[in-house]
Length: 349
Image (cartoon, rainbow, N blue to C red):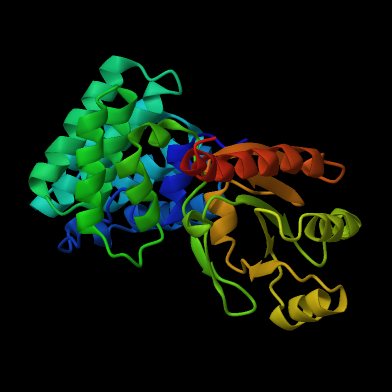
């Protein structure tokens, strides 16, 4: 149900997403009522995730701007990504490159282009498309050497092409370009040490502040398994699953497992009251704007994800009655075995 690890990272809004558009001077098309109407419609439809209609509306707006408007072209590109029309998205990114007025805006378009090519390459990783993506990211780096985004993506592409040493270099360059406080900093460090890990279907990197004030960073879990539970107090099936969640929290207490429940509740007071009343003692986070949910591609609840101790997405389950517990036992056992390896080596056993 997750389209691809890369697409999820794009939605995350962290440094990994293709660059933001630079400001553009006011042009005559911006005062055109037809352009304004098309853009207003496109933004509304896109927010509703009706990507096919948004694509048509952004196309109309771009046509009114004679293909010279980076905003409508970027909207078209995003809608095409949402539809999985990656070849069309690459073409839209090429148009953005052609009208870019500054090195920064050109780098942003080149990142978009490379990103679409990677998605077009698919899980099998068609070499010609991956090589083209590598060229796009390197062009972006030439225009903006401090782009953590471009270095990160190029590191992933090079790893998929089997160029492990070159991949490690790009991840190290990425680390040098971003802040240690960035949610993706730890992941970039892990990939620099083990570039091959970047080719796995990783869970989106994220950092949130939980209800108890603690900071939850997925990549700082230190070899523990993670269970993410998307739910809401008003969701009937979610309430049915609550006893099961409480059982999991109790059964795996003291084990290398972290459970985080992500709520869709808009009413903070009701959410807090429900958690206290039902003694939900594990990590709690309220995703009021659904940003984190969108990162994971979640549009229905209850929805679960299991993530192994390396940060790799291992399972996605929707609805009540999912065999979450069985999957967790296997992952926790694997995490324990992995954690025991260094001590066995140290004792010579």
